[in-house]
Image 1 (cartoon, rainbow, N blue to C red):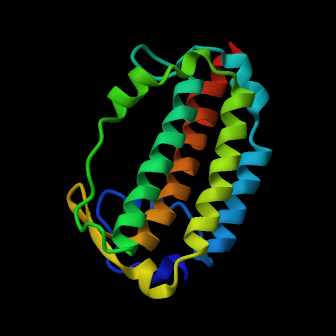
Image 2 (cartoon, rainbow, N blue to C red):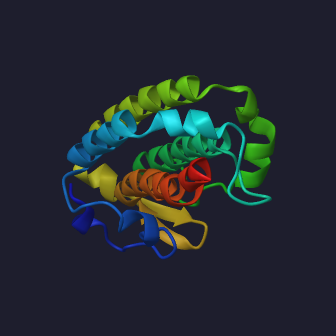
Length: 174
């Protein structure tokens, strides 16, 4: 199914979904794996634990956040697609970040896990039929289908990659 088949387009999460092209989900997953492979991880390594301003996460924290988010959104999609629940449990991203220990992990370790997880996520969503992809529930304040959750995962990655490029990488030039 394509992004344009998401109905309804969930408020708040649409900002991530709209970052992804209107292609079949499996193609979008493949594209995201390409983005993972081609991202400038050397610059992330060079950043170390620096953030662009006080109170913001360092690059390892952002990557761990992407991992946590993907797992949470995939679990929500599983629950909706299988009819296990229709209201997704919430989460506190700052509490997760505080307790993740990302600062002691290498960028190489985090990116290897991100790639493995994306392959697993792709296989999971590929196992769902159209009816399951259209099953929906409530995330935060929005009705979302499993399909919307899949495209949210991909757009969320792209969103944070742009933040790294625009706000963090310039720190290396000063």
